[in-house]
Amino acid sequence: MRLTLMAMMASSALLAAACTQSGNVERGAATGAVLGGVAGAVIGNNTGDGDAAQGAAIGAAIGAAGGAYAGCVRDGGCGASGGNVNRRQSYDARSGRYYFQDQQSGRWFYENGDPYP
Image (tube, rainbow, N blue to C red; front, side, top):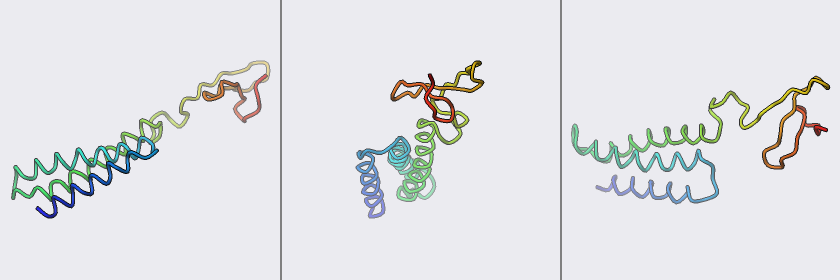
């Protein structure tokens, strides 16, 4: 009972930390930890020795890892798209160089950062 209470408090702290200005990785890890902890507690209580606390700890760890990976992919990392996230490049035949449009400013730049005419 005491370990279950501690696991619930740790999950609540993770959930509260996810309310800060963090990225998808942190939010995914916190959400995964909470959902995994709950699922692990239910499964751990209903199988084997009936140890809900151990099931909650294992479920929280697996859920946090899965949630962090899902958030990383959502951010465009972890090998999601080969490294060029949201970057559309075009070829300028006159200069023989590639250029792209910056999504935030809407301005065009060559691949090395020089302004595109």
